[in-house]
Structures are given as C-alpha cells and as structure tokens.
Image 1 (cartoon, helix red, strand yellow):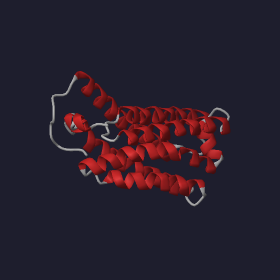
Image 2: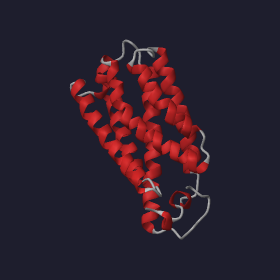
Image 3: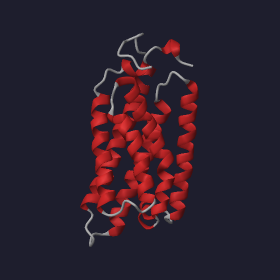
Image 4: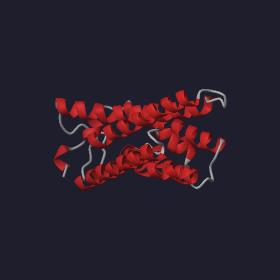
Length: 201
C-alpha cells in the first residue's frame, strides 16, 4: 500500500480527486491552526460573540475539509473506505448534537460543556485515519502521532484533566504537527496517491 512509483498515467479524474483529497488536508490544517490562534489571542475582555462566530466558522470548515479527505481518499481496501465514511457520518451526528447543546453554536457547546468534546471523537478519528494511512504508506511518522494524540487530547479535555493553558498548548501541538504533516504530504507527486489501480477493491 502506497508506493513511490507511477503505475499508470493519471487521468483527469485521478488528478482532480487527489487535489481535492489534499485540499481537505490543507484546509484541516488551516482550520485547526486558526482555532489555536483564536484560543491564543482571545483576551478576557474581547467580544465573546465575535470570537465565537469565528470559532464556529473554523469548526464548520474543519468538518467540511475532513469530509473532502474522507470522500476522495484512495484506498486499496474497499472496507476501509466504507468504515471511514460511516465514521464521518457519525461525526456529522456529533455535529448536530453540538449545535443542539450550544444552542446553535459549536464553540458555545465546547466552552460551556467540556464533556461535549467527546462528540468530536469521530471527526478526529477520520482525520487520524487519514494521517495514519499516510504515515503507513509514505513514512510520515508524525501521522501516527497525530492519530494517537488527537483523540487523547479530546478525552483529556472532556474529563477536565486538561483546562486553561493545557487546552491551548495541546491544540498548538496538534496544529504544528498537522502543518508539518501537510507540507510533507502536499509536496509529493500526485501519482503517489493513486498507486496501482488494478489493486483496488
């Protein structure tokens, strides 16, 4: 799985799907980095409503970008892709629950009800699957770390073990690692993501 070799010429559809898959990874890194920046720069006396609005926009962007990667990922084993899509649908269910808990605001739910971070686990599982797949295929070892750290971070936040500066530093760590992962991934030739299409199930 995952070979640095061109097995066949890329079709137009191949190129489009790879670009969309990688765009999802890039936008996920931007969304998480933006959330980390908001958390770092939010002053106690700043407008909570405007910060919440920006945080919500970034969170919706994260859901959309992870979805792009999920639906355009290239996997040899069809069952893995089915599992990944179902996990994403579960994540969308979590999104609906977060909106309900936060009275229309994702960030409101997460700020006032720490346990609601558990509802982000399916989404982090999807992104972690993507990073772990790339780590397995192309030795992007930070992908394995991200796949372990992201759900662990959410569990610690939901349990109240991480709070205040801990929440901030944890998110910064994830953002930095994801940016490194993204830069290493998007600089690869497009053909690497397609591999040998004859092996697809």
